[in-house]
Length: 160
Image (cartoon, rainbow, N blue to C red; front, side):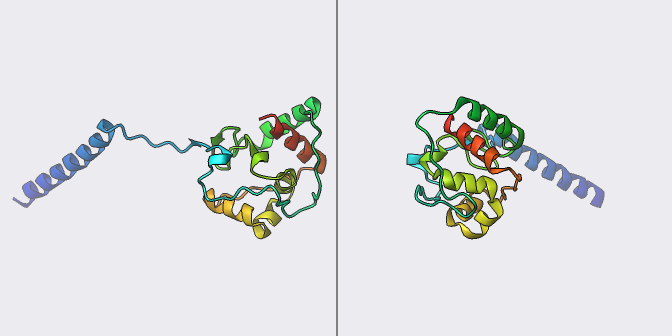
């Protein structure tokens, strides 16, 4: 008799769990780990837009010429595709933020210092710390780029 009750209870448990999963499918339940980044003007992630913050690191002054240097941008794109795309895309939020329009939210100096000195930025820069929290404490790794390589990546980001 105990075996019958045990079998009956197991059957109810399996049927009950199966129905809940089926209900989620019928409701169109879907989970996506990526989402489109909101445009800078409509940012709702709680991370402030600050174009005056130059960040913490070796770069204190960057001046972009009016026209994009296509050769430098191509070098930056190659470097970006090699080391950055695991965490960043142009228009989609991933492990790190989408980078299209980054210069509408951050100064060129801040961007280059984040590329060159992510450890120092995460320790001392309030925006980098806010981004760390926003992106589930996913730490940007130091890729040990030279200033020239970082400048090429910065130029490529202008093309996005």
